[in-house]
Every structure is written in C-alpha cells, then in structure tokens.
Image 1 (tube, rainbow, N blue to C red):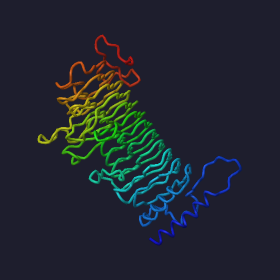
Image 2 (tube, helix red, strand yellow):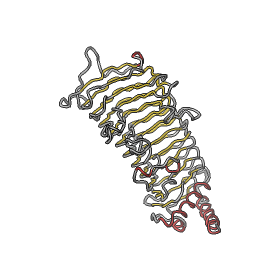
Image 3 (spheres, rainbow, N blue to C red):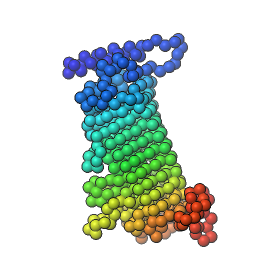
Image 4 (cartoon, one colour):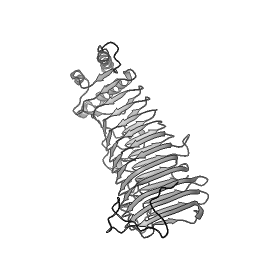
Length: 431
C-alpha cells in the first residue's frame, strides 16, 4: 500500500508537469498527457511483461481518472501493456489515441469502461486470453470495450480473444463505432442492450464471434427497449456459439434483434453463420425473455452459407438448430413483432439440411404483423424459400419477388440474373 501511495504521488507530479506545458497566448489546443515520452517508462512497461500487469493497471487508471476534462492521452503505437484488471475512462471529453495494445492477463477483467460523456478512443486495441469457447464469461468486465454514458466515439478499435463481448453498450446514448474489428470474442461481437439508444455502427468487421456477430437486445427487465440503432456496411464471418452454451447444439446468428425498436441494418454481409444470418425475435419468458420488436429494416446485402451449424440434425436425438438464412420468431406470449422489412438480399448456399431459407414462426398468444419480405434472390440452398407456421396470420406478412437465380447467368450488379415471379416487377423500392 505504501508503495502505491508513493507511486500515485509521483504520477500526480508527472501528469501535472505535462499538463502545465506553456502554450502560446490565446491557444485553444487541448491539454495533453503523452505516454510516449521517456519519463513514463519508469511507471509503465510497454513490453507486454505479465509481471508489470498490476502496476500498469494502477497507473493507467490513475491517469484516466486524474486528467482534466477534454485531455488527450496519447499512447505509443507499438506499446503492449499487460493488465490485471479493468480500466475505466471516467472523465468527460477524454481523447485516447494510439494503437497500443492492452493485454489482459485476467479473462474476467479485460474491459475498458467508457464512463465519461463525449469520450473518444482512436486506434486502441484490447487483447484477452480467452481463445476457446469454454472460457466464455457473462460479466461486463470480460468484454473489450463497455460504453455506459453519452456521446462515446470509438474509431478503428480492435478486440481479440476476450471472454465476453467484443464491444458492449449498456444504456449508452448517442454513441458511434467506426470501423471496429472484433476477432474471436467468446460472446457477441458487438452487443447493444440495456436501453442503449441513438447509436451508429459503421463498417464493423466481426470474425469468429462466440455468439451473435452484431446484436441489438432488449430484455423485458430493462427499463426501456434498445432503440434507434443504425448499422451500416457490416461484415460478420463465422458467428458460432458452442454446443454446451447454453444448449446441446451450436448456434449464433450473424445479425440479431432480440427485442428492440427502430433498428436498421444497411448493406450487410454474413458468411457461415451457425444459426440464421438474420434473426429477429421476441424470445420466450422461459428463455432470454426479450421484449417485442418494431420498426426494423434490413436493406440490402448478401448472406452466404447461413445456418452452417456443424451439428445441424446430425444426431437424431439432439435438437436441430433449424433457422435457415432469415428467421423471425415471435415467442413471447403477449408481445409482438411488428413492422419489419427485409429487402434487397442475395441469399446464397444456405445449409441444405435446413428446412427452409426464410421463415416467420410464432407461438400462441404472440403477435406478428406488418412483415415484408421483398426482393430476395436465392442461389442454391433449400428448395423452400419462405414458410410461416400456423400461428402466423396470412394477412400479417407479404412476400414480393422471392426469386431464384441460376448461378451460370452473370448479368446484374450482384452477378446473377434473377427469375421474377410472374407479373411482378422486382427491384422497385417499397413505399
């Protein structure tokens, strides 16, 4: 303890010295704490040595907690800081730059918590030690970045091998993620929940997530639905939850809205999702117990190799994760899925063992209304393009231009000439 007190006192002097550097009269440049300067080598070990994890964690947390609002904290691009606990950025307007890597030594405590308003992070990387699915954890501290306040902006951040979600938002508002990369998170790649709202995700890339690639989730217990989320140009490759979490078969969707309102996905790409590539649901009270869904739009993109779950119906005793490429599931009695439009997708090579390519399923007492499937082009996959079960009223949905494209015809911008339904002009945007 005495050593920590002395260390913190010394840090205060060093930080104050950097913040007090004279500026030209009238200058409006921000205060800067530059961790690239040689003096910081006495307090921070940038070599990745696990022996320095405790000290690095203490020093970085002290820096983030003690700077004035609006300070720029600059990290060396080539630094690797071993850490032993979560880091928190609590001061409003803090800007953290540099492609340094935070190398967590503790699977349950890898996260960077963004708790200040208007915090910006550019280029920072988080790397955990959870490389296999059996290391999954559900606590927020096991994530890469956790946004819990207003106006956060993360640009070109990267997350690898964390035990939880790559990026997690908890009641975050007015946030933006630009070109985030998540690799081998053991939970969702990007998980937006707990009444998070008014968020934009641009050009996300998620590879090998241990659950859904990009998910919007609203639990019934949340104070409000997660809402007003826009996801532009995402790519998800291989979303896959292990057979032992939480069921006996593998699953994990590329893009999910499980409870939520006013959610838009534009120009999506999904490759080899274990479950559905697009999953929109109000999940049952006996399961995840999520809210109803309304005002969801999926506008364009390509779904390749969907529902590729390696255990799909392989064992007659085991249940099948039979999703197809697009699944709407209204399974929470008393709630509903309403006003959903799925448009402009090319759906290619869906697992032939799936019973259908797209579907709407409902349970008794759960509502479905105003659903539109339009301009979907199918290349390969199961013969059944669309199916709704008996609990879904026939007037609750419309299907327009669900077409099959022979792969040998290469004429349009997607590479295929679709075969339209008789008397229907495809490709016209809906009102």
